[in-house]
Length: 103
Length: 424
View 1 (cartoon, rainbow over the protein chains, first blue to last red):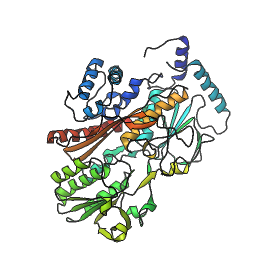
View 2 (cartoon, helix red, strand yellow):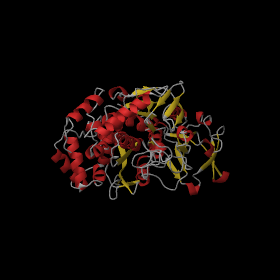
View 3 (tube, each protein chain N blue to C red):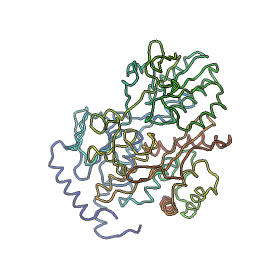
View 4 (tube, each protein chain N blue to C red):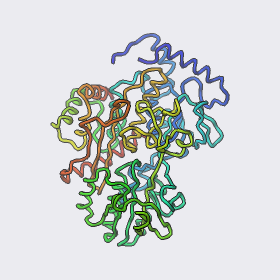
């Protein structure tokens, strides 16, 4: 999703961004929705709080390939093969793109 | 894209209209979302509302200042964790600028879009999220009620009930019988009772090895059954007996003083040294009194937005709602909360509700180094939440010890991440 800047957009942002510490207010993207379901096990923003691997900030290509390998049974897994089978290439690409942008 | 001009003017208009109303509790400048309940559903929803929008006012009404999770409470029974390690403290409310009102809800007025609290205050909302969890159907087992639960714990809301059951297990003599009574569907955490049986067996095996566990089940089959039963044979041979409903498993009555349960219209009785009676449940009583439940005792919702089909602008998430094929679990509630938050922000902005996607992953610990899981991904199909075909399922039956050990490690990792994702 490309962003459209306009003086009006800026005004709205200034008016509604009143609280500190939160992310930019904007459209809720498909990748964001899908990736939010990863966070239950992999931690908020993919920053794991425990023994499950962190998944943020990894190049999108690498993430995409990993998920496809899980899905197609080409990569050993405990549970990720069962998850990955649910997603299309397009969905995997949007998850990977979103997660790769998290710093 | 952020708010368009029409939506932005809409907000100003709404603010102006609201400010004219008396007893307005919160700032009128921005839309207000009120969340009732601070469990996995409520706490996650509040956090993700903020992650999706900086401007919306978010208030959580929850009488407690911390939350003892049901996930992990079986590990306490097994002696693997202390209560402190399953207690969450709502650190996320401060981080995400969520107002926490420690009060009980007395009444929801969906016509006035307001919530009356037991401290005398009234809170107005533009959108309300109700996440009350479950309460017990005390009348469903003769002789069992809230008072009886002080002696015969259900331990299916974590807290003092967990500690009571743990104490009874520790006080039980070697060679005693533990009875675990499991209700019919639907109930929260379908594999929960069987993980519990495993954890109790783990404790008994090392402390009271002559003891037995008798599972009296109202159902004919249960979640991850093959994996559980194979593991019981391997880890706790001869210790756990499971009786399905048609073979006398459905508990109908209890004599609390004699610690005896009755099945098959009183023809069969079992005495337990410890009885854990998981009473059948329905949606939290608040959902009932607010008119959000139907004849089933649960809350019907639009499965895209989680908006109640009975009261507009009121959303119900977590165990209390009927979310298609999703089981009632903390993981489900956490995912539903995120989809509900995204839907509410879209509705407030007069944008289209995003297409939801859900996951449920449930780990069960059968011993400290033996874990199993069931996973599912859900999408919206013909307006209902349905499992994505060809995905999900349980851990392989033929997995080796290393695999089980890794899933045990991931069970703990799951707990760490989902509690952080929900409460921090």
